[in-house]
Length: 96
Image (cartoon, rainbow, N blue to C red; front, side):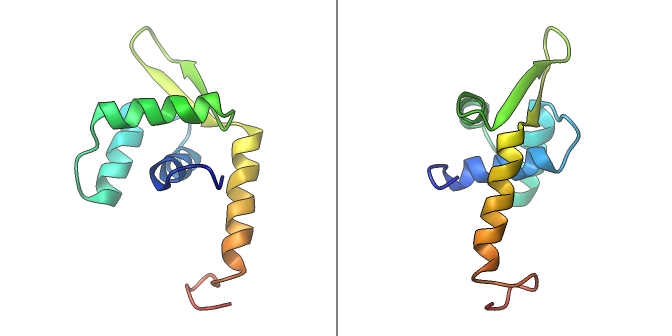
């Protein structure tokens, strides 16, 4: 996960928190978090990068809509990241 951008990590977490979300659902989730518009030109290339890295699977719901889900590797990467963070801060955000 060290080679991902912060935005790509946020995409992983947004996908993990939903049940096979489509691109617009992910976009809306991140727009709420970032409090600004996320453009398609930023969203979809980064989703494709996560797919190319084997962290996310892309499926087709219908001809116009794709959905995304974490791979086993993607879940392991999130777990490893959380373990790494726990070395420095506890669940309340206080130093460990």
